Structure formats: C-alpha cells, structure tokens
Image (cartoon, rainbow, N blue to C red; front, side, top):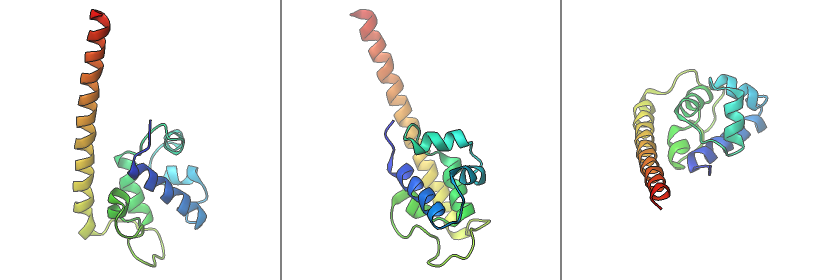
Length: 129
C-alpha cells in the first residue's frame, strides 16, 4: 500500500519527535498515541496509512499543527517555540481539524466503495470468461 501525504507527514513528525528528544522511540510514541506498536510498525513500513486516532492524538499530545499534518500548509508546530507537548487541543483549531478529518473519512469511504465495485466487476469477468 502506498503511503499518502498525511502518512508521510505523520512519519516526518515521528522522526522529528525522536530527533528532538520529545520521545525516546516509536514505541513510546505509539503508547502516547493510544495505538499498538504493531500498527506503528505497519505505518512506518508503508504497509498501512495513518488513521484518525493517531492523527488526532499526535495533534493533541505533541502540539503538532493539524493544518500542517492534514494539508502540508503552515508550520509543523502549533507555536513557533513550544515548551511542552500540549494536553488539550486549542479550541480555535479543534473544529477545523475535525472537519478536515471528516472529509478524509468520506474520501476513504468513497474509495472503498469504488474498490469494492471494481472487485465485484473483476469477479464477474473471471466467472463469465
């Protein structure tokens, strides 16, 4: 599975967090993001794209800009000089981030429906031909 742009920015953030010693390793980040270490490995190896929960939690727990993570625009950090990871999302970006995530989920649902139709058509071609 090819990684999408959001997954690539997520992985850039994970690398940055380790490099800047805001986290010891990917295992610690996975635990802080409430995902399994095996899912973190799947994302890191490009076998899975990052989902809503790790995106939401990296924004909330590490002070990463939701706009940058989702669109690539602006700065990676919510502020230019954060002192500690944030425990709560700023109120002014929470709704925008949620709306963006809803859009991503809708796009993924449409892609799943398209792929399911493609699989059905391929099965029909195999059975009929």
